Amino acid sequence: MTDDSDEKKPDAAAQSSVEPELSEPQRVLPELGDAQRAFDVGNYTRVRELTEELLGDSNDEVRQAAQSLRRRVSVDPFQVGLLLACLAFFVYITWHYVF
Image (cartoon, rainbow, N blue to C red; front, side):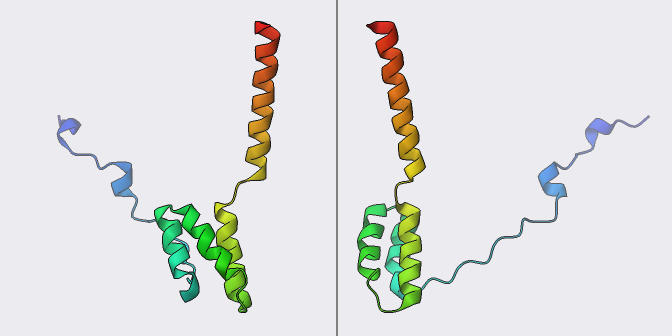
């Protein structure tokens, strides 16, 4: 009789030889290099400053890329609305049960 516990069973990650397909990286325009690096390290204030300058660029591709990058660091209006709704609900519950 053989004992299967002595055999090492490979885990699921080792069995899968197919790696997920990564999307092709987007081409970074030279004008957006500093803004993209600032975005990558999380300095969103710097991203806003750099893209503000590029929004007035004469090159349409640069302007659109700067606008796209700026949109990625802007405040989401849905989040603001949800925050205000939660705050209003909190005030209602507090007023109803405390006062």
